[in-house]
Length: 234
Image (cartoon, one colour):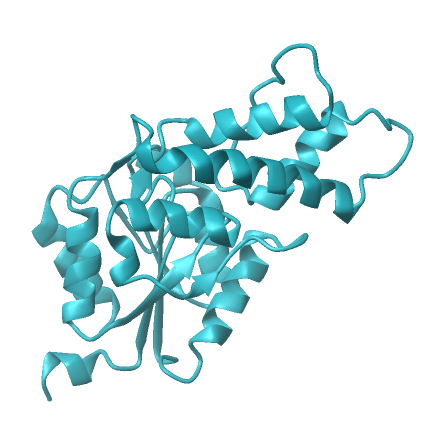
């Protein structure tokens, strides 16, 4: 059996931010600018944590903080308006903005997985058009076209279920999530998948309560990454 046949029933789901690339806080800037406009703020909104969160949930948190209708519940339509404003700002500026970078060997990793015949897809808290803009800029879109994204009130675990279902016909034997936050570990657990955490943003100690299957500090030691993937998919 050649290697491609060996892995034909395997699935790898990639997170984007903090895993494949970083956007130099531009996403947070565009989001805060959208909040300031939609909520008619005189100054900048405070910074909240984006790590491991979905765009939809971030939008809801900001509206809960700054909506002019303090007594009324936040409704879906308001979140959609905020996310449309955020998307417009992001898509008009991101492609040429300074700062965003793919992590060393990230594209090489995605290419190598494709060469092994392993099915791979996207598992992200980004809304779909934002995710594709990030992947397009750094050449990942050739290999990562399909996946599950932030829609409605879905949390990361629900998005993981949606992603796995998308690929249920192609790959259902071994599933592996590659991410960078505790929420990626929890998403993997929700679909009975293994999880590799890349420590681009958080040290291994940050995962003591929810340890991943494997932790790699980054992708610089590419041999270690290859060995880890092959071991976990056997």
